Length: 78
Image (cartoon, rainbow, N blue to C red; front, top):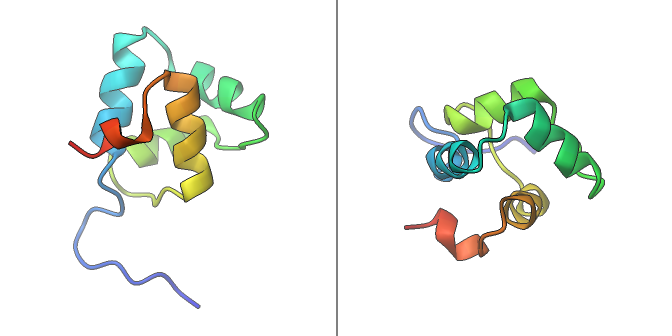
């Protein structure tokens, strides 16, 4: 079954991921590598697409992002 998403943006957390990653002086590749330690495999290119809103984010991926970026999941939804 395909995903049904209206509009250009495929997620609402990408800008916050970008902001938090930059605040922690972490590259997209470093974020990808740290996620891999949690068995969450998101390549650098996919991190870029998450940040620009052109890729969806699963609940497991969001959990991993929150864990690595050391913020509560709720902080992605301001």
